[in-house]
Length: 503
Image (cartoon, rainbow, N blue to C red):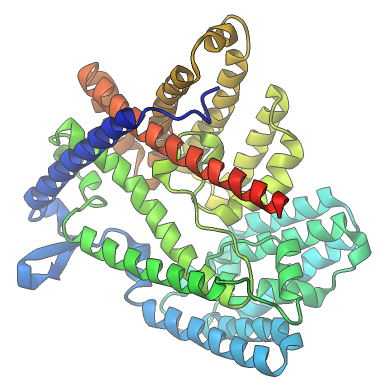
């Protein structure tokens, strides 16, 4: 109930006003904290000179972001530009060979950055999983794939395999960890071969799939069946307006990069949490904004990475996985992920396979445990990852338990007695609480357990009831606005489908 129900415009206007004011107030607190802490001794390593002509320093605490746009920037531009150029030439001259061009160019890029022995190592994993796929047993393919993944995540095998990397490229240690994507791609190939034995995929198909350069080192993962069907089109045709959308996506990526650069000159959201004494002096509103902004930044980083890669993939006539859903629009664990490609892979081969329709408690519990066990292996087993996996596994199951409880008497009868608008308001209250559970559970891995513990104590314990209720009300306003947006999009989609049926 209440999902497709509109709320009064005045009520939504009030929610917008409250949310805007709260964000501005929290932002002001973070800005003042960043100014006060700019010269602290604890900040010296990660707050470096930035816009010196106006006296602004820059937060450089995120190694990945700094790497992408300093030491790795020219390499990214050169490699992807070369890929686009050769892909265009091949499409014009010999479109039937474009998949081979992708693979050859990607393999040469791997040799140039990581050395020939690393290429042979990956070929060994590819050939091994290809041979396993010939047996036609999905459980065997998945088991060997996970064992192969573990060899890149656990010592002593990871240390032994890293010895295959040769050359002097500065970022080899970072790029080596991208080999996990090769294993997931090979596993996808093996499982699709088992699911469709009549199609008889070859080793060449696997190599074309694995060595597609835009996806090779950092993803996203595109399951083999989707990639193969799209790259095999001899004369692909772009939908109307596709080039405009590609240019718009590229422009948005550039704007996001510039926005983050500006933001880091005024808000030191990644450095501040490293000094817990300083954090403890922040007002509650600024602390809540700091926790929220850490997750928003991680989403922006993923959106930029996948936005750039997806722009190139769409130029190659592919339909890649979309960037993750914005954290601001998330209030259920079932939609929470920071890598849509990995999420699609896990859902297709593990979560949906075990959990079915995700309506029964026991199968759902088994599906989530299996999914997060593989996710733990993918991220690299350690105490923080174990904690993150357990918390999110619990959150996903707890949602289903609450849903099942709400379907029982007398709760279902109580909701039936409510108006649709009131039902939507009640659900938004639970959505607000769930939103902060998502933030806390993911803040553990994105920042640190110590910072998460401090935030929880300040906002839930020492700040109760004033701070707790105030933050929940602001979040409730945000959830209602997100629901309104979802309702509008759903109505537009229904109208579009009705129009297509009439035509």
